[in-house]
Every structure is written in structure tokens, then in C-alpha cells.
Length: 312
Ligand code: AHR
Image (cartoon, rainbow, N blue to C red; front, top):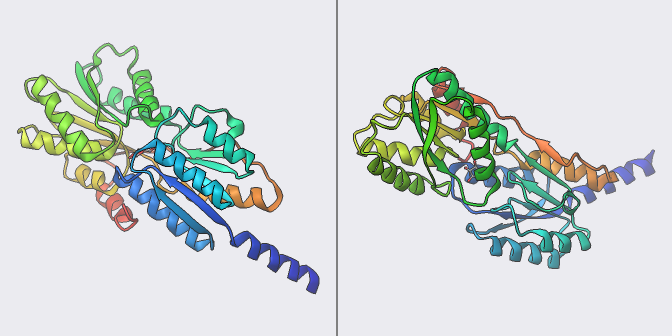
């Protein structure tokens, strides 16, 4: 028994003494900042040493960070990939070095053998949930939609667009009349919405805004207010993430709906890595998180209170 206890202690100490590299995209949105905070918290709670690298939205910085993690001999790598393509070589290098890579919140086009698992939501489904909300809300009314896309080439921008288009397909009264990237930022959302309003001759010809994240929606809400348009009423606002500020906007009547993306991707990622490192348990290739719709009827004040201290 004594020997067994000693073995368990040694094993759990070894399991806790992990060094994990995290190549984060940047801090473009409130959601991203929350993911970083929660990853740090999760690592600390589990006794993991986290090597954090902020890529400032550049794939080349992410590739350099991964190479440096490999050179340091980290036990595993978390990667939130800014865009979907161009990862094969560096992922092969990690595989050759026998360092498992877990993708967080975005997908890559590389072969599945090049990473251990991916934690994230079904990004197409998120767009479908947002689109279905609009279909149900406008009924048979004519609805001209403007769309703020996320970072060009990123899997959420590609998939959230596809999902929304799937949902409105066959509803000829709903049409996307303008669509442009706002790069997942508030500033981007505000600037592009200003140009949409100008091009459309104000807000009267726009029925709804679909933004690929809440931050762009919040920037766009500001642009609408400055232009004398009433967001949430004159122009319906639906977006994705469920950050605290969008609940405040919903409570004020400025936004109508959001689809939740949990910022706690690291919890399931560390669970999968722990099991894999303990006895080689292979996780599913995709660990899916929930995509829940919230509207103004879902007590946005309470949702704001519940989230406001989570580091968003
Ligand atoms: O990949 C997830 C997306 O990235 C979030 O929806 C957005 O806010 C972030 O920038």
C-alpha cells in the first residue's frame, strides 16, 4: 500500500509539473481577453506552467511561437489559429517532436493527424442559430441585412457566414445586402457600420445587422446612435459570443440576440491532455461546446451580472 501510495504521489506530481505553450491570437475582442484569462486561471489551478505568447493577429508570429515552444521542449501546445490555412509544416514539426497540439476555438484546414484534438463550437451552427432567430423574428416582412464579418480567412468568419446563409435560404424576403469584414474588433465594427449607413442613405433601408461577434455589434451600435438610428428597434441586432457588454446592450434595448460561445476552452483542453499524458487516452477529434441563444427575454441584466467579473 505504501509503495502504491508513493507511486500515485509521484504520478500526480509528474502530471502537475507540465509546461504548456499557448499561442494566442491577440486581444481583438472581449471574448478573446476572457479566453486568455480563463486559460491562465485553469493552468494555475492545475499546477501547469503556461508559456503564453500573444501573436498580435499575425500567423507568422504564431508559427514562430510554436517553433520556440518545440525548441524549449514543452509538454504540449495550445493553439488558437488566427486563420484556417498554412499550418501543415509547423504542425508536422510538433508531431515529429512528439508534442501534442490542441486547437482552441478555431479550426485549421490541416489533416486531423496533425493535432490531438480541437475544442470549440460548431461554428456553422452558431451562424444558423443567429439566422434562424432572424427568420423567426421578421416572419414574412422584407428584411435587408447588413453583415459584419470576422477576420478574413478565419474559420469563424467563413463558417458563421455559411451558417447564417443556410438559415435564411428559401426565405426570399430576407437578403444580405452588404457584407464586409470588421476584423472582430469594436473599431472595425463601428467604421464599417458607418460606411454601410452612408451607402444605404441612413438606417431606414436596413432591417437588421448580423455581426460575427458581439464586439463588432457594439461598435456598430455606437455608429447607429451617432447617425440618429435606433439600434434594436429601427435596425435589429444579432451577434455571437455572449460577452457582458452585449447583455447590457440587450438590457438597454440596443441589441436583440446573441449566441453564446464559452470562453472556457482551456478546461476541456487540459482535461484531454491530462488523460492523454496519463495513459495515452485519445480524445475525440472535436470536443464541442454549446451554442445557446439569448434574447432580450432571457433576463439580460442577470446574464450581465453573472459574467461581468469573468475577465471579459
Ligand atoms: O474564434 C472565436 C472568435 O474570435 C470570437 O467569436 C471572437 O470574438 C474572437 O475574436
